[in-house]
Amino acid sequence: MAESTTRGGSAEPFLSVRDVHLRFGGVTALDGPSFDLRRGEICGLIGPNGAGKTTLFNCISRLYQPDSGSITLAGVDLLGLRTEQIASAGIARTFQNLGLFGSMTVLENVLAGGYHRTRSGFGPSGLGLPLVRREERKEVAAARELLADLGLSDVSDKLAAGLPYGTLKRVELARALMASPELLMLDEPANGLIHEEVLELAGTIRRLCDERGLSVLLVEHHMAMVMSVSDQVVVLNLGRKIADGRPDAVRSDPAVIEAYLGGAA
Amino acid sequence: MELFLQQLLDGLATGALYGALALSVVLVYRASGIVNFAQGEMAMFAAFLTWQAHTWGVPLVLAIGLSMLIAFAFGAGVERVLIRPFGTTAAAHLSLIIVTLGLMLVLTSGAGWTWGYLTKQVPPVFGEGVVDVGASAMSRQALGIILAVAVMSVLLYFLFQKTRLGLDMRAAASNPESARLSGIPVGRMLMLGWGLAGAIGALVGALAAPQLFLQPNMMAAMLLYAFAAATLGGFDSPVGALIGGLLVGVLENMAGTYIDIIGNDFKQAVALIIIMAVLLFKPEGLFGSRTVARV
Image 1 (cartoon, rainbow over the protein chains, first blue to last red):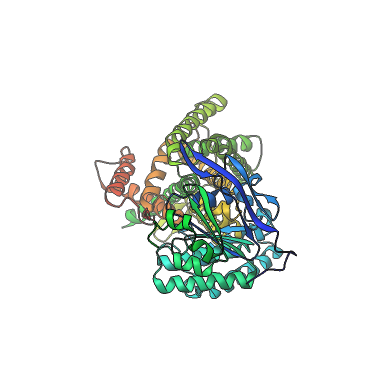
Image 2 (cartoon, chains in turn green, cyan; image 1 turned 90 degrees about the vertical axis):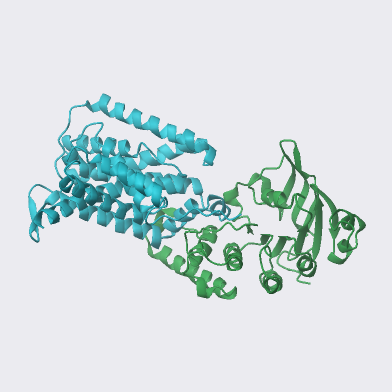
């Protein structure tokens, strides 16, 4: 498998989620799930609707603050960070229903994703100093390369609003990659895609993971895709973890069959 | 025909000011999702600062520049101190609109308390006299206003479309959550938007003051025209605001000249009619984007 060797032994967990609790009013959204994601691996996060998958995503990307528990990435306490600091901590994500900048072009969307890599801050950038200009050209070149890699060169100068849904899903993926993340979080990337696109997407995710040494956390309802692409599958139900392991082991776990597949599989 | 051309040119000059003020309204709307009812009074206050600096002996152009800087800082400060604590959710909009109405009253009475209600004379920054434009003539000030607004618009276009900072500001306005996740300091971008709006308003105030006569209620009517311009152009479109301003300026002048019943005294009704008509028949305006929700 794609074991990354960037930081020594891969036995040490990269992303570590411990006993995370979150209640909205009287509803328990997360009831203490814990799991680890090893560096360079793809972890599928599955579960029926309302299992808490997106809630957990939002906790990791600091849109929600859990009531208790801990989430660390390579030893860094993520719960101590603000949303703005997530990108420089090495995390990028996509949204279930897209979170693009509709009034901006595809290229501009991707450029915006690379904000934390641009170091000059906003003082000189408005003035167009030469150093900044050079950096901007490098950013544009990097963005165009990503767009080409994902087959989006044709639409790079089109406004995001109005492009087909499947295309926008890839644009959002490109924007996330532009941040050069170490952990890529994909919230239902196959949602709304046709069958061929799903297969292609699975291949793309696998390839990106191998090429860039990315670790991927993947929420997805498309079971065949999750099982084929993941190294590890974590199953949530009603905010609790009910299974965690290699895809084939999880698939035959009685608790999963009972809760998630309704006994039909 | 000569009268027509004359009215057209005059309309363009006032329209440029309406457009510029509309632009500041639109910048705030895009950043925070609300209409700042105090935008006109912020411009009026800045015009008083210009006048004050000028009477203390600062050259007029420098005085305008200084008041634009102060208005920038004030606008940014308003966002930070008065607006941000309420959050940007739709539920907060009513509270925020009331806050801006309160600010409007405070600025009006503050200006009255500081400088009194007697009108002050601000000299035209582009000087007296007229320039021949084809068969008609235009005051130097009117021509200067059009050029100044054009230069400002080009600079803003450059900022928003050609710089990293502009890109980040647009991203923060378009989708704050995603912008935050990319590391963009959204709060700082909103402050910048309000600051720019304040500075543009200060320029409008200083350019309009010679004709409107400087007093605390100077901008009240102009804000109505700016709203008409922004509505006509599309509330989320900066280009629309400017073009809307020019159209409103010309329409208002033409209606005042050619429709007897309107005349000079009833011109403001034109603004109201434009607002009503746009909202009824084309609510997104000429250049605005239709709000589409993906379910």
